Image (tube, rainbow, N blue to C red; front, side, top):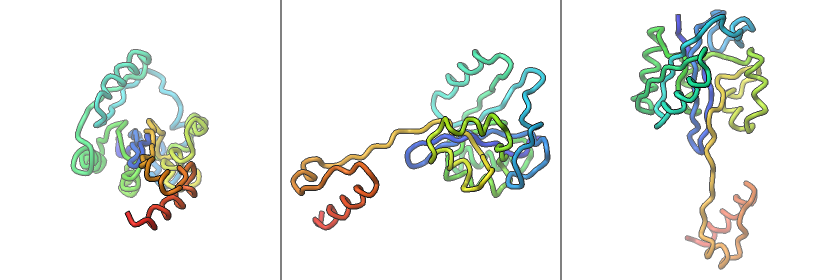
Length: 197
């Protein structure tokens, strides 16, 4: 019986997204009690269809591309609204009822809520998951571990760009260097603030 959402992460600037996947619960461990056993990570003996819930516009096209390239692992997508009153509330209801989807989209900041609801699976025991770690920037991967050793509750799906906007004319006029590190950003902020607006 499906009762937990297995996460895969996705990062976007301030609110990072998570691709969450639901586990069939091979070893019966709760989300926080231990990593998936190797047997839980073994490939299926036959074709698989995974249910996937997301609010991302156009995700159906991504799923169609996946399905075309992977005939033995098909994904059935369901879309819904984002946020606590939309997809998340549906996820929590489905987790409680034991019929959550196999995959779902979750923001990084919402992941702890799913952990305390026993709604995510620790997939750190899967060798392929851990082998993928080096393919992601450290902060994105760390969001999926929730600061725990030997824990991974998701795989980053997307990482959005970050940019700094500033008034070049005011920086030049006041002799403030354009920051290229967080320390320089802090110093520039102090100078801007001291200017009084």
